[in-house]
Amino acid sequence: MQTKSDVCKSILRLQAQKLSPSAQELTYFSPMNLDLVITNGTLITASDTFRADIGIVGEKIAVIGQNLRGKRTIDATGKYVLPGAVDPHVHLEMPQGEYISSDDFESGTIAAACGGTTTIIDFVEPGENESLLDALKSRRAQADGHAVIDYGLHMTLPNADEATLAQIPAVVDAGVSTFKMYTIYGGFALEDNEMLRAFETVQLNGGMPIVHAENRHIVKYLQEKYLSDGKTAPRFHPKSRPPIVEGEAIERVLALAAIAQSSAYIVHVSTALGAKAIQRAKERGQIAFGETCPQYLLLTDAEYDRPNFEGAKYICSPPLRPDDNPPALWDALKNGYLQSVGTDHCPFFFEGQKDRIRSVFTKIPGGMPGIESRLALLYTFGVAQGKISLNQWVELCCTMPAKIFGIYPQKGMLTPGVDADIVLFDPEKEITLSQDMLHEHVDYTPYEGFALRGYPVTTIRRGQVLYQDAEFVGEKGGGRFLARGVIS
Image (tube, rainbow, N blue to C red):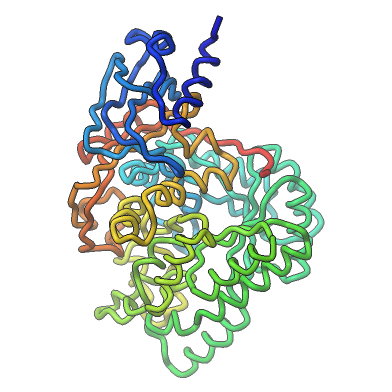
């Protein structure tokens, strides 16, 4: 006699063959058993596009088939049905000098849910003389009971001394298996020999290094040069961090990873030089991943010339680039040399934070909002313009981040047995982005006035509707910490 598990496996095989489960198989999922059914939608995964219904029991997808019925039904006629998006790079409640990023775990995850994201991965940044596990505990205390979607964490390595590296096995055991390293910033920058030791230790303990790569020596030299010449306006921010700053650092980091026989994930790649460095590493056979962000695909360094100090809104590191870089990044996404799109969401108010110190660009808090608009931006300016395919869109925003960071297939997939994290996306819905319509807790969006065709209309997290009819309708605080094991 078939068990329900056998039936689910059978349905999955049939789905792969683009067939439907039999009536006998579906008797296991009667209206009395299915809590929620999404009907008449077009399912989009990283590999397939097909018409089917999804039946949900509790927090899990129970069945994918035809003509399903349940206690509650959502009609997805004319809609795409996607796995919930995974944003692998956000900074909520992040201290930066005297400032703290303006979205906390509640407001930031509400905004994420309203944009079709059901999982985020944020960061732990240990304080001076604070153990990694204590920092993790404190960070979880900020999120637990406040986040409305599920979340994971990356651990930042403040240094690579023996005492710090000795803590890595315990951090992996606690569910954090990715470790952020920097080649820049005084409090975090690792020398090459330190990074080699860190790479080796992380790899030996089943973790994966993720790296912010910029050449700090060039940046310091150029910043001092511009400031000494009285060139202090926001437009000198990108000039102090030209593309070679990123290109050289990514090449070097990947060389160190090769020597340490370690994988490496490069965050927020913003340049053609950086994307090419990752391409060459992959062609050499290295396990190397690259992430870019919507701001580097859609904006350029011309934004820094805005009047009334509004160029400060676009201060982030790495900075926006000259207009020959975005096309190269789109090509890298299309050809698989960059594997994910995160947001690096790190919002600061323009009024009272970014505009507070106008005397020097180096003192403007760095970071931009974007957690809510990623999925729609990549559809309008990627899929609809032929730069990436429909399935690549799902792969980049949903599936590959889940795979890379060890939460697949629990997240990032539509198949029986996984979390019912689902987005209904209307490809015909027209919206003009503005700060007023978004849920991000900040006073501007860098995408103000962008005309979109295609937008999320429903977001479901583990079977619970969080967003519908342009409103957040979920319960607050229902997000869970995702303990991630060894990265394979």
